[in-house]
Length: 74
Image (cartoon, rainbow, N blue to C red):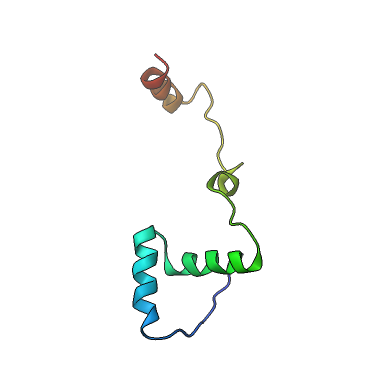
């Protein structure tokens, strides 16, 4: 569960931090969270770990399965 946090940083640092986050394709909040995880000695969960178990396999009676099977399994 995420919680909101208010922090105060130097006025010159904020635009640099935003540019850095944008260049990495993440939000400033994510960048701060990653830094805090490093300091705390935690590893951020991988993409696979975050999404494991969240998807349900399509059944063979699903028309999407048939379309994908025709496209990729032929």
